[in-house]
Amino acid sequence: MSHREQAAPRGREPACLLCRQSDADSDICGEKLFIHGFCAHENCLFFANNFPDRPVHRRGLWCLHSWEIRDVVSQAAEESCSICGQIGATIYCCRRHCDVSFHLPCARQGGCVTQFCRPFRAFCAAHRPQQAVEATPEPGTECLICMEPVEDRKTFNTMVCPACKNAWFHRDCIQGQALHAGYSSIQCPLCRNDDAFRKDLLTMGIRIPFRPPTWEDFNAFDELGDRHRRCDASECLFPGGRQEAEGQGPWELLLCSSCAAEGTLRHCSGLRDIITSWECDGCAGLGTVSSEDPELVALMKDSSDNSTDRETITCSTRNHHINTQATQSSLWNLPHRR
Ligand SMILES: [Zn+2]
Ligand SMILES: [Zn+2]
Ligand SMILES: [Zn+2]
Ligand SMILES: [Zn+2]
Ligand SMILES: [Zn+2]
Ligand SMILES: [Zn+2]
Ligand SMILES: [Zn+2]
Image 1 (spheres, rainbow, N blue to C red):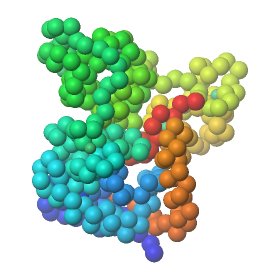
Image 2: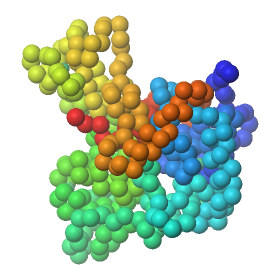
Image 3: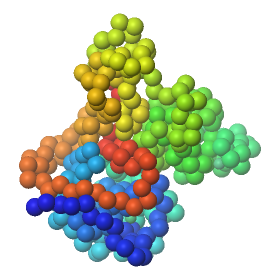
Image 4: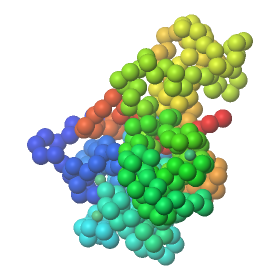
């Protein structure tokens, strides 16, 4: 069976079959996909509790059976959202015996947390995670981003940097910041911690897209100082060290075309001159899971043997922007560091 690229239906903007919205925030719901005749936001699919738990997207192609999409859509049709009351809820609180379900675009309003990284866990307002750090804002503390006062303690809407415990901000403000900065540049505005900061944001349900910061689009050359600038090959062969590179030839530094957060010198990854773009292991081996979660690794093993006869289909999305590839593939490779 061969699949052609499916064009988006003409006429009125089609609604996502899961959240039932046609104009939901694409920063949260992701691109609208048209696969096997179904229209759905990519993140509405990823969070659906019966969505296949294996890598389904590879180099611009979606590897999904039509029945897999159909299953998600038909189960969604039976479930109503605890926040807006409409049907099409595909997301369940992951706490055992909790049967609260909701739509992705309703989550924020209902105080629910959705973690935008594998294994895409979601929590209702009663079971959502709290920041582990012990901290209380001084009276009169302001959000570092909007300068408006924060609440008098950590809440769903008031968050703190886990590293310095001094930087306070509103959920919406740091979410806005994360969308601009992207995975490689998000950091505490005060102490500049990135690792612990990022981890806490992801746990608390902030979406951090895997794309270069938006300001690089405008000023690609001025921002060289902030760009990733080292060879991350497992064995770097350059005599000058990982931090050095030349403008061209075997020692030219290529950044990952998906995440821009990893680099390699051509020679260190055996890339000849004719190759102009490269993807890091994390992005190319989409679905590489961290071994921290044994449950997830087990699931991945279970489903790996039905990959032989998978149908492949080209995705076709609306609202295309330059980094489509990056945002889509990025979902599958949370921290890939060596
Ligand atoms: Zn949707
Ligand atoms: Zn809803
Ligand atoms: Zn719950
Ligand atoms: Zn704020
Ligand atoms: Zn900090
Ligand atoms: Zn190298
Ligand atoms: Zn990458």
